[in-house]
Length: 117
Ligand SMILES: [Zn+2]
Image (cartoon, rainbow, N blue to C red):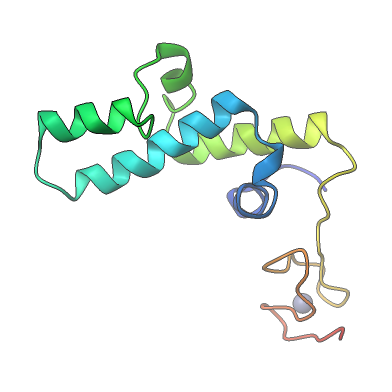
């Protein structure tokens, strides 16, 4: 597989979450909870609770991973996962059109409809 695209990065984050390092997991959790918090009214107490429960982090080294935005972050994670685990990620490519299936277990292509059951 050539360069990592956001689609490939998403596939890895969803299906190979266990291959993330602890700092990557903390940053991912932080991002997801910040999105949730953005929908709620500002509350200092809520922020404190989130920090205490480690749903958010205030560690600069962890937050630095998100400096260039979420997409850049998952691209970096995916590249690192592939570098450190060259044989663990199975790219389920369609036998007909060569595109990436939705999951490692999928047996039908979401792009061309090809079925390999
Ligand atoms: Zn296909």
